[in-house]
Length: 98
Image (cartoon, rainbow, N blue to C red):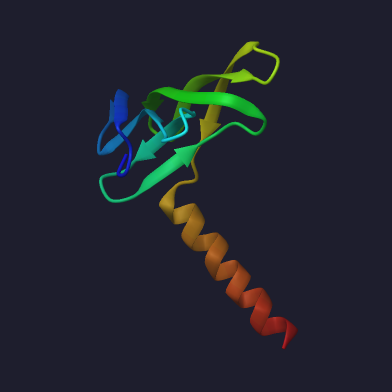
């Protein structure tokens, strides 16, 4: 992850890489890198998050909540075609309301 001292990759699928990084304040975050864009993955309310594996559009990992309990997570990333369709639908709705 650009701008960090420590970045570690834990999973790869095609051109997608997941893992974790430690920021300047010592916080640990998960990431998804698709070969172009770095995306931070943080569970809401977590003290730290790490992505451990990826398969297609599914990312798995774990995080610690503020009470110190560890939890697992699975996140499904939207497919590029889905994002495009959602964007086109939003544009169509904006045009209809005018």
